[in-house]
Image 1: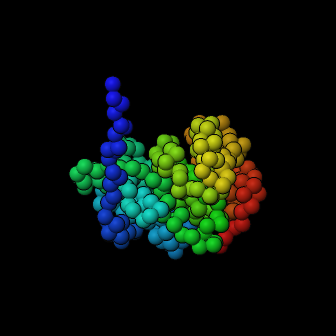
Image 2: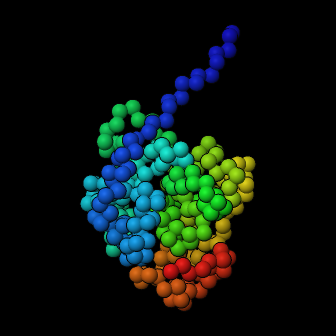
Image 3: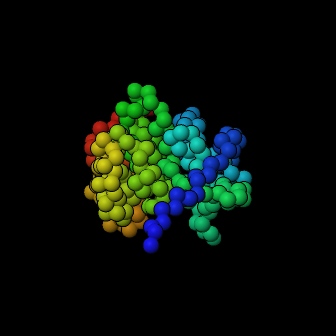
Length: 263
C-alpha cells in the first residue's frame, strides 16, 4: 500500500479588522471594569493601561469589556467579551456567565480562531527598556491589567483561562525571554508542569509559589490570584501600609519581587 502524505490542509488562522479595535476604544466611561479600575488607580493610569493593552468596550451587557488578542505581528486574533461589576470589579456570572466572542456576535463566516496571549502585541516593542523586562504570565486578562498597574517591572500577559492558549506553539513568541508564571491558587501544580515546555523556548522559565506560601485555606478554596492579593485594600490609591497591616504576607511578595511603590 502507498503511504498517503499527511494532509497540510489545517485551516488558516482568521483575523479580525484592526479598525474594530480602535472603534471599541472610544467609550471607556461606560465600561464597568474601567470604572472599577479608575477607583483603584485613578483615571490617568487606567486610560494609559487600556490604551496600552488595547482593551475595548462592547455594546453588549451595558458596556462589557472586550479583551482583544493581538499577536506579536499586530494581527487581531480574537476579541473576548466579558461582563464585570463596576463596584467589585468581579466577573458577572449570574444569572448567566457574561462571556462571548466578537466573531460570534458579529457572525463572521468561516472564522478559524487561533488564540494568542492577551497582551502579546507588547512583545513587539524591541526598545531596550521593554525587551529587558521579564515576562510574567497569569491566567485572566483582568489580572494582567491589575498586576501591570502595581508591578510595572514586568510585561504582564494572560493565557485567557487555565488552558486558553497555553501550548507550545503559542509560546514560541517568548523565545529568548525570562518568563515567570503566576498561577491562580489551585492551578499551581498544573502550571508547574508547563515550565519544562517553556524552558525549551525561553531564556529562563520559573513558576512562582509565592501565593501558595502566603495563602490561607479559605483563600486557597476561593482560588485567588495575584490581583486579588494586590487589591486587598480597597482604597482609591491602595495605601500600601494598610495592605501590609491587613495581610503581613504581602510584605513577602514585595520583598521577593523587590517592589517599590510607584506614585
